Amino acid sequence: ASSPSAHSALAMASSSPWAPSSSSSSSDSTTTRACPSTSASSAASAASAAGGAPALLAGCRPPVQGPGGWRGNLRWRPVVHSVAANEADVGLVCLTRDAVIAAVQEYGAAWIAQDASRIARLFAEDGVYIERILDKGGTFRGRGAIEEYWRRQILGKQSNIRFRHVVGDMVLDSEQRRAVVKWLAEFDNFRPDAHGDRPAEKQVRFVQMAILHFTPDCKHICHLEEYERSCEKKRYRWPALDTPEDLLQRMFRMEPGSWDDSPALRCLCEQCGEEFGSRNDLFRHLRTGGPSGQCGTETWGKYEPPSVTNRPSRRNVALTVSYLGAGGGGGGDGPDEALEQLVAHAVQSAFPSQPGEPPMRQTFRSAVAAERAPKALVNVVTLFLPRAAEGVDDEAVTIALNAAFEMQGGNVKVLWCTGLKPAFRPRVFFERFEVV
Image (cartoon, rainbow, N blue to C red):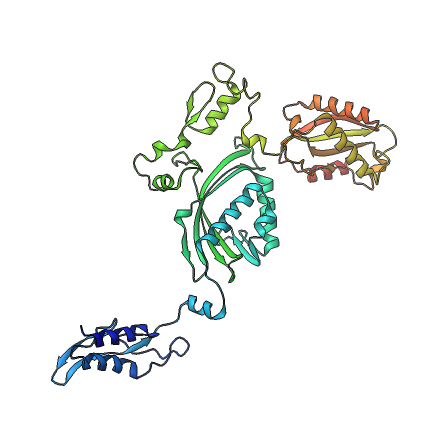
């Protein structure tokens, strides 16, 4: 219909909360409303009065002209109100892109800073974090459980963490307060159960997709579900995490020429100019000094990659000690406490911690229990030494610690030092020691 009256009738029908359909309205009272009986007839009548065919509305059967005038199927169905409309009614808010970006960036910053409590604060009090879907050991409920997992995971196993949120690939459902996001992550992973040819430290790279569901006020995450694709094998190509967004998208699509521009493939030695295929090859070159023996040493001194400088010490030892005076070390709040303090002071004196070195692990363990220590002539303690002791043989450690004990005037002497693997667990060993 081309008349103004027909157009106004169409506009009136379109602006109604009801839309036309070729089927009858549903009888489900929870999702539908009864349609005013005059809606269809008023639109058709207005168009007919204008002298033309009634406007063809979406979902209606095309009208036909017969002897009795225009006929058509103008049945109506209700439109179920959207979540946005319902939220507006109760005063809730819709999720925005900026809110999602801020949450993901804070997630990455807390991860890099290795701050487990900061990550936990992103979640609601009863929030759910799913690291591995359908794995009964991969789901954590509540802030406390989430914080405990991250404290154990990032403080005990990871170092040199880097994170990049790929903002351009976000999928957002504002009404449902859900978002699907993608990020790239890389870090050095320490594996305490390493043995044989399996290295204790390994660089990890992966692309991760995550589904985020936010609370009604959009201030916290109530559900986070992660899916990971590892990119550690040689067939994968890995971009630099500071690559511009447009180039990064071309790399994801493997467009011709995109990887040739990537700075990730150019691992250059700044001293001799030699190029290497990976950072690991470059680090090996710097450690050995290169063909001239000067690369990595002439300007920087002893070169250490971030995986070394940012990790705690791996020097785990067992010290067999004897008490020169009364059994158990004497003095202090108790024999065991006194021994721990004496050993800690001697270790710091013999092997001072370097500036910026991560704090020492609290791993002091003694074989003889505190209540039996006063009668002990010999004890065995295990602990991690500072990084300055890495590379120092066991005999030199014994000499250095005994010199520190003499300076303190204590009554403890190290009989010998035994180097242990970082993953050594002393509990079973100490049980056997007590039996002897």
